[in-house]
Length: 435
Image (cartoon, rainbow, N blue to C red):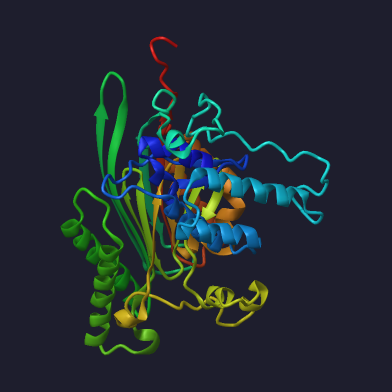
């Protein structure tokens, strides 16, 4: 990060290292940046900001810090390390101490040279940078230009998009309390040089519960309330977390008020889970209440559940209880949150934002599809063809419903699938006319 800081600062892109969501480690353990961000001209990032970022990263890692590392971070953040020369010197001393420590787990053989650092990230292709001259003073170092070596950085461009949704009563129920909505607006932008898509999509899935005909009323009411809110409050940018919370609060209030009007009590109070995704090109917001889930599936990371069920078992695990003990409770699968049974003080939806940077499949599922680890068991046969484009999503979703009826037919089954394909984010460095 220090070398990248030296390279990016003269180009006014140092803030690229300070956005935690912009950092990732690839499969080879190399630090990569998703893209370059231009610094705010009114407030250029300083070394103190880099120190604060390091402090944040290490605190999130929950690892025990060496004393000299912790002290260095504090000194950088407080401004006691004021030059790159001093920072490099301190880092070199710490590296030497680590490599020569007799108990070092990184290099237990003190006579063996430490391995070379990995190359700079391919996404920030600075391979042609000249070696840094250790005799240069700081002002010269920070003004060395990398303009001739920098890559052309483009935002991730959406070039492929498809979505589909389906619900099914299941093999053992006499009515369907699941309800979903799929709304997407796709515009194609094409020229002789490129073809990209601009997409806005709202995906809502609800699994209702409570009383005679109450579940389907609650799930449909929640979906329609959310659709109405975003139709009025979503223009050209992804809604904020505050707006999403307000929308979910309105859906909860609509069901809660109906419960109050009907004087419903106990299990007769209707309610519903919620899984929702809002897509704006390569920006994604997800929100959920209850045990309806959202997954993502990619070639690099496989199948990932990106929501955590709001149920007693998961609550106990988050409190430190072992999973086997948490799910041995008779109420382990009881919901801790749902829309409708309680007022706004009784719900705390989980909301997160993601920047999409690889081809992937997004799945919104009711528990009729996810029970018994169904997706975790059959992802290779039922999701891989969807990600690769070998099968349309309409057919793929139908196959998922059939699979769930075969193994989980005890409940209603609903699935929404979204397939997204992106171009590469960085083009090769341009060479000058003379070179």
